[in-house]
Length: 364
Ligand code: NAD
Image 1 (cartoon, helix red, strand yellow):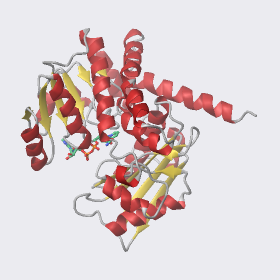
Image 2: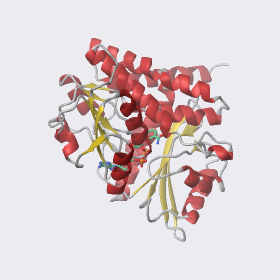
Image 3: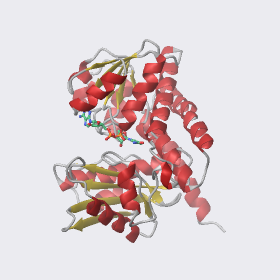
């Protein structure tokens, strides 16, 4: 059963960990470098807990704890549904990635990762780059997503974008009877690493693209390269579009935005898009909106990262990521035919795999 996520201010962190099934929550602090980080390890049933490190200017430590808990659980489901032999974990560093990220801070964080002896393997997420991962790798071997010139699998964003594009097309197939996105109006929220690659796919296919971002300079770069219409941060929810693609942060599908969204499909790369998985997943279903589960549609990046961990070739990554089209379509079909929240359908598939492998592990 899906637990409703509550704030650690109203319920003890341990109780929330019990409800959500977390194994560990590691608090990391270093005065000299200014590091404040939290590592969430949700499950190691399928393998070491792998998930990226996010650097974000959280308003409170409580927000950071909540994010670490939610994101690490999401990684367990993502790694499981993608068929990878990996558990779920995630780290958050509290701070402004543009102004507070330094070599000592990243290397100190690397030391904390190393202290977990491989139970947690880190990678890139929001606010981090491959160069940052190189600093972390100076202090720990438990890091993936390193630059290609260092023998790593490189930036996972193009594969996350490819998978998201595949999931968007699968949803279009179900909704419109064709997976062509030519002429479809798509709003992209967040023109970051993944957002830009999604815009590139959509441009090539002839979609009409609307885009927003916090940073004006980033929007200018995008507008110089692609035919897009720039819209305001809040205006994105009121547009008359076919597809809304959340590619920034989480919880953008909530009571307030759902009453404004006019799209028929929600398909984006952001993690934790539904503010409340049950309430807002059900609300999408009731409104006839196809919501493509976040941890499934955005699993292309971790598929790429896994190829580094398991020494698999690039062709394997591309094929497995393209197969997300079929997996998304299967989840959408089940959701529609059984009138069941798509997020719940995907979680069930992921949880079933974790449970079945846990059973095997106890046998000789
Ligand atoms: P990024 O930091 O490169 O890009 C995020 C962009 O969103 C930034 O340009 C930021 O300015 C913008 N943004 C932040 N808040 C916003 C808001 N309220 N409105 C509009 N724009 C806003 O990150 P990314 O790597 O592109 O990842 C984007 C999302 O996809 C994140 O939720 C991340 O967790 C998820 N994701 C990324 C990958 C990956 O391979 N990078 C894999 C899986 C999931």
